[in-house]
Length: 126
Image (cartoon, rainbow, N blue to C red; front, side):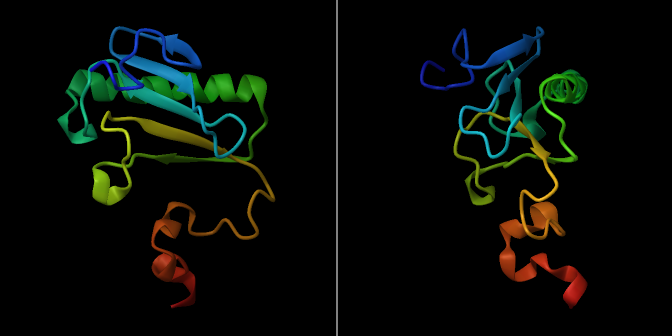
């Protein structure tokens, strides 16, 4: 796919690649060290990846974490996949976000990824 930013031969920020997976710095990072783990094959949904690709994606998350740890000192991580436009996916090529988190980067990090639906995020108060 010529217009897909993850299918280009040399994606910006690429720092690791195997036959099945690429790992790169996010071009619009939410935090220092925000990385993307992307299958090489153009596939929109995580649920359409092969077992081999899913295994490689998991292994590549470890590679990404090690690279982040080498350059930054995060206090935690969010790991997420936006699968389909209804879930917020804007690039129709499966990708996993590894988002380093730092003490104080938000006033109250409780609920993490649940904040995609703010009215339901504070489950501990209901």
